[in-house]
Length: 167
Length: 167
DNA sequence: GGCCACTTACTCGGATAGCGAGTGTCCGAGTTGCACAGG
DNA sequence: CCTGTGCAACTCGGACACTCGCTATCCGAGTAAGTGGCC
Image (cartoon, rainbow over all chains, first blue to last red; front, side, top):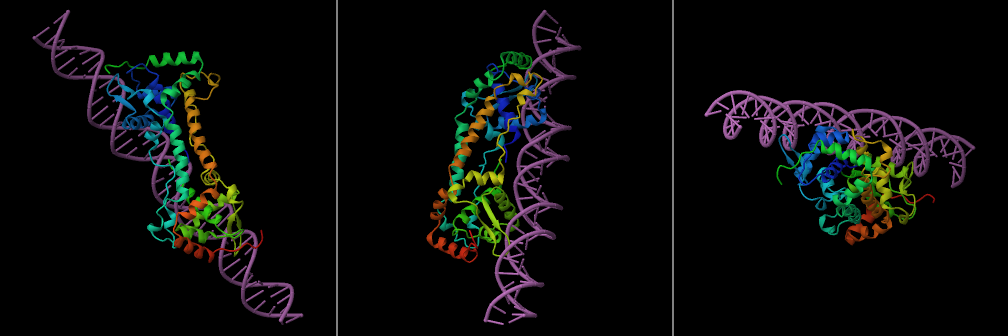
């Protein structure tokens, strides 16, 4: 089992958009080119983020994507769920009720212990992703690279981003 | 993203084997029939559990599967990893190094913040599964069903299980 | 020179193929218990 | 009646098809800027 590749793409793109000036946008082409990704396929994931209300799109020339709300309000969980879906990792199909010895649903009022334990672990995972916002990560995201590389990135982005027409 | 269906199957089978008398075995047919599963496909997952050293098999007539170690020594994580694999959920492919602005690996000594955050969440998930042993779950597993159903299950199992030839 | 309409280029958005992991199945190797014949 | 041998049935184990979701791509709808002509 593994998470969708698009989760990593979406997370990096959201963090990149978070580093832009207020209201500025960046088109799919720039986001894809910067990360060395397929432009068309990345577009699909950006659509998912748009539908989830995490980013918003401006059509037409000088258009592109920008965050729909401040980085402090965007959790990693929201991004993961937007791209990968909100389905639980472990789905209890109640196979204990399917055998020839099954006694009907009334005998299984309590959820099975396995289901409870798996759900608890999954909750721990989701909670860890929920407390971490994009704003929290962005500082590390910036300090992890050398100042020289950061400067070069800023230059490259400045040449591709579009300032906000209105906000 | 979802866990393999076989994870649920494996967990229930392990818990069922844990309820058997010391050294007794249960064949694939019984485990599959009890849960209403495909016998041949379940066999595949039981093989994975055997290769992982969680359960052990006795061939021939009167053969079957039994736990390879006591339920206290079997964590849910071990079962999950045996069936679903030990690959991490989130695999950081370092896409920030792939773009035209990338400055070579020496500029990225620190792991990216996204990777760290995702790994932390994943560790929380694994840790929650590691602290939960089959012995812990088995008590809930038994109390969740009515005593009448539990008795009927015991009867059904008694007619299918094979006592240990030696241990 | 200023204003308006058209063209044009660029953007996102959804609908359409391809591939790989999980799913499902089958048949063969190995082993143990049983039955039968011989002593 | 006891014992040794052969048979047979049942078990696990690995090798072989199939399906669905992620991956990847394309083309169309919509928009805003730029350009040219007209007043």
